[in-house]
Image 1: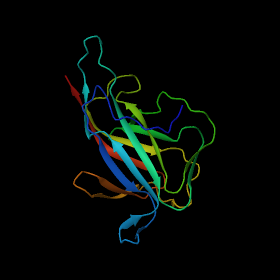
Image 2: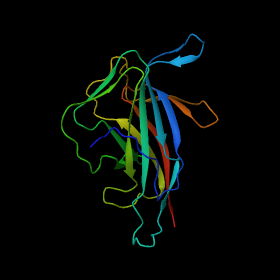
Image 3: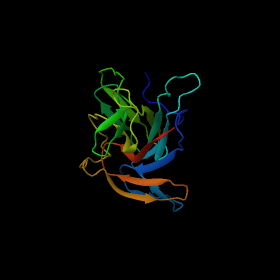
Length: 210
């Protein structure tokens, strides 16, 4: 199974619009010869669904039960440094997507019913290149019930990293985000990540539609 894939932001049972979050994980800014501000390090861009999603609880004409609702999340890492960036993992799983409640409990995850080869896996990003990871997570609990209406957190992150690129300085994972700053009228957001493990998250409101 190819776990480095571009997920399609589409669900027949949800009424959602995608939002985009971008961030820089490491490095310092500068200017090019034309005086345009540039960034170095690893740039992270994440495509999330809208902050509020609706689960369609109405059964279809044929279906006795509503279809299982899902949301899709995609994270792209771009290497803006002059050297190859390498992440190493203990298995074939390099990322996961989580839905957590307000207490931090995992309600659903992309990897919940998946199995991964237990082999050391490398994720390499050449200078100027990008790698995209992402997938679809069900809006259901482990026992198959629809997630109840309420406020949650949706996140995507690289998981179980054995080693990190030298160009990304390890810092305390207790302080993953230091600032959130709107940068355009289109809603693009810059999140400065100081956690050495790439991670992006957003609030998610789930409601039922009848």
